[in-house]
Length: 391
Image 1: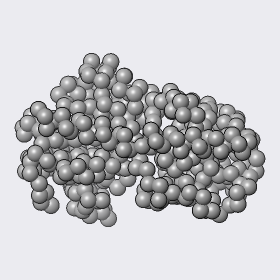
Image 2: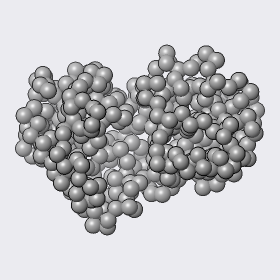
Image 3: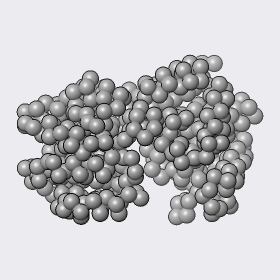
């Protein structure tokens, strides 16, 4: 794909996935495109996807890897990584972007090479606390050590570091002895026209039923087992809708059957991002029951948390610092201990305890959207890029 733009406006974003569900990256890329930057995203080719396409105006180039079918063990992953890095670097050297925007640590070495060879500006966009990420305990000790050392070395060379919340910004500032990273939160665009807005849709239930919604991957340590079990302590007219897919699906189905909750738990499967907010806005409460398996999880501000708010829903969330701060500051819901089904049930019960209180929460959520929206976050992204043009 020929990328038709002057060098000074050309931006290369890099992800180590097939770029089909990475809403944060697409949101940032679209923002830059709207401001006149010519953005292209480098990703990994997967069967069934085009090698080259435009997604919402953003050019996407997927790198075909001959090594892709090698075993998934860490040793073989190295060969896949090397192939991706070499092929991506060749394309970057050809296109000569003036900014390489690397998403997560695994793409940062590529951006570092581009900076050294081309003199490109380099942005490190860390989607979680890399040294404490969720998969860290399953990885070999040498691999964890290498990742920590690599980040500590490379982060000194970047021209801008972006993270998703204040706690992670403070942690990285202290850990790597650098200037405090810029916080750009995972907040979606507010599109009022696609929301439910009292149209009567309520997942097919009458208003006497109350709908709790969970959206996200069905994986361990997301608190889903406890969430389902919490229904046993709640009124039978409280329904749980689960949107997403994952390895835990069969186990969750077993729990539902064992506890005789088949009429109260609805699995909707995967929903395309373009339809997600409208569907979410049919619910009454959004829930984030994630567990503290790593510091990265504990400090998280997940996409779904903000999506619930944008959809106009009061929230019930794990009692973790970043989510707690927003819930308490804006008075938009309740917090709970994610290890306890009874604690989850109590938080939900409080939200639905009286109609007047619930309506007050709904009104607070609408007010919170004036401050928690992508329009405010995008300005911080653009300021980083404006600084480059001033140098």
